[in-house]
Structure formats: C-alpha cells, structure tokens
Length: 242
Image 1 (cartoon, helix red, strand yellow):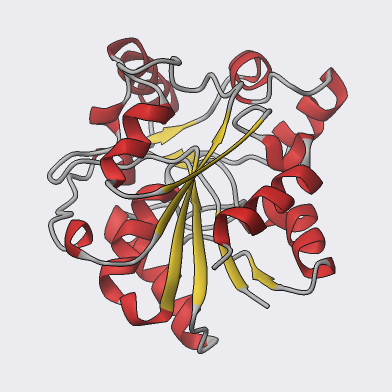
Image 2 (cartoon, helix red, strand yellow):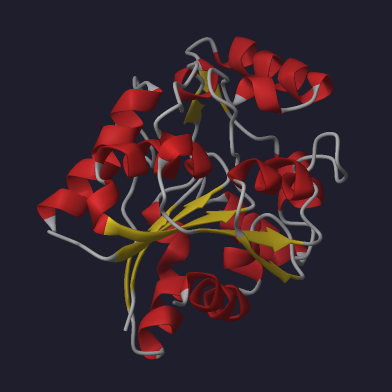
C-alpha cells in the first residue's frame, strides 16, 4: 500500500481529484487531496508562494503522514519542490505531473513563453485585483482539449480566480536540487498548455531538469483528471511504485 498526496494546480482546488482519489483507493492505497491556501471558491486569495507551500506542509504534518508519494500538477510542481525541502523525511517519492520544474531563482512566469506572459499580464490587468481568470475558450481548446463540450463546461465551473503573486515569486531551489528523493515525471502527450517541444514544453524541457527520474506517459490533455480519471489514477500508481 502507498500513501499518495495529490496537489492541484492553478485555478483548481482539491476537489479536482475526487474521481482519481476514489480509483486509487479502490486499488488498495490511501490518497489525500488538500487544497492549497488561497485556492478554491470563497476564500482569501491574498497569498504568496511561501504561504501556498506552508499550507501543504501543515496539512501533511497535521495528519502525521509519512512515507508518502507527493504529486504536484502543473503549478504545484513548484509547491512540492518547496514542500520537499521542508519535510523531506516524510516523502518517499515526488511525482511531477505535467508540472513546472524551475531552475533556481526563477518564477513560474519566467517559464512560460512570451505570448503567455503577455496573456497572463493582461488577465491580471483586466481583474483589477491581481487575479487571473482563464477565458472559457482557452480552457476548452488548450487545457481540456480531449473533452467534449459538456465536460469542458462542467469542469470550467469548478475553477476559481488564481492569485498572480505565487506565479511571480522567485524561488530559491538550491536545497531542492540537493535532495536524494526519487522523482517521477508523468507526461500527458496531448497537453498543449505549454507549446510542445524542447524549447518550452513539459517534456523533455521540464522533466530533464530533475536529473535522474522515472518517465511515465499517457494520452490526454492537461486536465486528464476530468477526462480520464481512471487512466490517470492507474498511471499515478505506476509513477509512484517502489
């Protein structure tokens, strides 16, 4: 039996993992899906990256979880890297699921191509409160391109505005890159949130920054937790195995 902690990406909260958690647990494992501070509906979104990280550290410690497989999706790749620095003794393996792997001293914004940096900045200006809201058209065509219109709409309804501050905070990752924790990279081959290829894409650009890592691939979009939860759960189990 393994213990999985699944950390969601931007615009999401822990409820995005419900179907994935159910299938992982049906296979005899335990799975937890905390919500990062400042994420979800009806909460205070005035958070920075350090506060986001601390909320996941606090969740794991409060439940006294040990020997865990810690997964981060997208933005949460940066969260699990910093969590690993804080509580490395509780983590058996890290899984980066179509996730950002930053170089030391970089921000998330630094790691998207210029046209996406411009788009994010425009979304923030339009909100007047340092928040980003994904337009439905981008969600439909880029984030969840493997779903029909009905699923695209129902999953979009679960999203909430994303604070920009965690995206622009520069991260000190020197300690992370010294940790001996085993790492996996789980890559969905139809994920177009970052332009595919070596210059900007998830794999191999982000994955290879991990050094030695296990690569697990599957078909699907960035939001495959909605479009193929069972398939994703199966691949998470493979990515997290001993």
